[in-house]
Image (cartoon, rainbow, N blue to C red; front, side, top):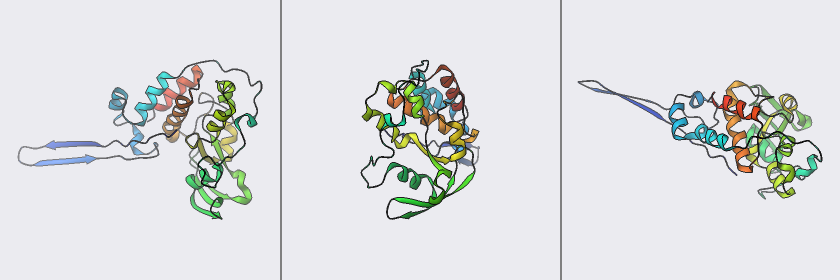
Length: 230
């Protein structure tokens, strides 16, 4: 699964009787939490379903709401070994995500990330990563695996659960402290910093839609609120 990124450009032209003055304001953000996520074109996006926010709203409207099942039978092992080499590039998923999300990356051999810096999306704090203190930067499942288990994944095959666990669109390198606070909570119980809530909701909804995972009524409402920050 891949979450496609779209960029919106707003153009305004003003004509004066003797001459023409044209102004072009293009706010571009690939992360979803930059200037283009401010909602300046949100009315059009909401109406026409254009852009990531519009897509997320359509997907959110189609998600099934349900009460969570019990944790009976859950273990991390039910989602396969961590971490697999799902793209067959010779590197495991954890190192792939570290290499993707960190800046100034240093590696040992072609795969193992041993150093870098992280602009933590959940708090905005800059974190220095070193292999010797690897838990300082962790790989978070945006849609937590334990929550997925309670919202329908308990009936999946192990292969499908392993796919979710290693899906890059459900993974983020984050600071260990907010990741521990988040744990297996859904959006109604835990939210990232406000500037990242739009992107977080878009990603959470996209994963739920792709894997046909249900969400609680409270999480559904909170996801809608987060999309209002776009």
